Length: 608
Image 1 (tube, helix red, strand yellow):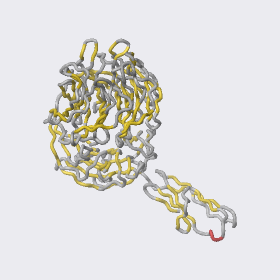
Image 2 (cartoon, rainbow, N blue to C red):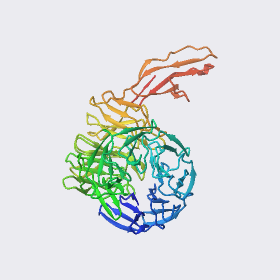
Image 3 (cartoon, helix red, strand yellow):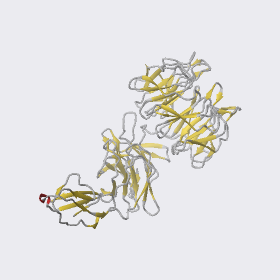
Image 4 (tube, rainbow, N blue to C red):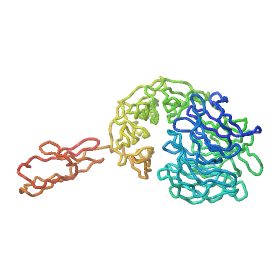
């Protein structure tokens, strides 16, 4: 069967098979109530199909098998809980892959058509039109493979099987070009394996079947180099297992099948160490099953008519413990550890848009309690714990910083109104929010860093103008509740990191630019220096010029941040005269005037 996490935090399970045959039934799991509810069945019973969550929140089910390979496709609408037929695949297939692309379309590749025939064809589904379009073909037809959306928007297809023989080959699909490119082959031939995109952009491939055995061998693909590297092996070889990326960046592998039968063991991979550690076993061996990471951090494992829910702990030999769920399912929210040990969750995006409601988690009780709501809906914002124990929330798409006063500053973000410049401060003692001075520039996907002097440095992000990544940086003063511009970044960036160094400086690294390119550059901010006025090193000369000749004025200045120039004639700006030098050609007596230049940076200017 398939298991799909819905925008409301519930899980939709569709199709599959049991002792009675192939199923058309569908059910929805509610993590808050830990209950299952039947929903409308599929129009066609199917097994080895795919289910893909679309950008609209609907679910696309494609292909699969019944009495043979199927081409039909159906779309589940969450609100009425019903299915609607949509355009069929051009090629019947089962055991294929379906990948949601960054543009909201779905790539279907590979699979099995009829016994002994493995199509190389690939198709792209357009949800807006409900139609399929042929795209570039795979070099090798395959089934039981993996397809992973990479951070650069391309899709990595690896391994699989053809005619009962496991494959090592791998290919990369470029949605912009609509074509496939061969990349380095896996170290080991494998099918029925898993492929997980890690936070560092690499892909972890585990287990599977190859070389007449259930593999323990694990390898990592580096998209930047196009190469595979072996990493720590699994303790237990397995096929048809699951791999789930946990919130802490580790990967949980559960169940599967090997020479001993159905496996109940579970292991956790630590990318930082490249090693595996055993964790609490499943209640019973599982294969073929699904594992779904829920919004509350739990992992739902289902197979047949049974299910288990686990919470992964922090110890090496971890156990699974349930805790209270959030009242409102959400993503892109902030979570701030308060001085009293509780956790404040604010904003985010939910099934019905960004929620205003705010919740506080009590680890001692394992429960959530509602507190005062935000004044503005927002997600992709920041939240900063202030020294006085309050929390400052700023901006967003309309961030998370702990201040020395114990309050939390939330900045920027996004809401129904677009990019937000607003900022709010949460006071845990009172359980209330207070608006503070807004940012100079609305932004989200920015950073907010608490400086040693108790102020907060805001850098980068994505701004209120399309394709605009602000270089402007701002500093918040909790004592005054005001923002001040400071030295700008040399390169505008978003989704970057900002790290407070032991010397009090701030290291900003990576991210993306206006063209969505990944950045390797890094910059260091020194709060002790800050921006200063430009200083004139060389003044322009006052020349006497012969009529009909040319004359050039130039100026040399130094500044703590990038500067701009504007030349003037008798105090009036001259069009297009915006460089450090300015030339007059074919000088006439009427050109006689007082020429000056204004040099401007983010802090101030000097006039000449």
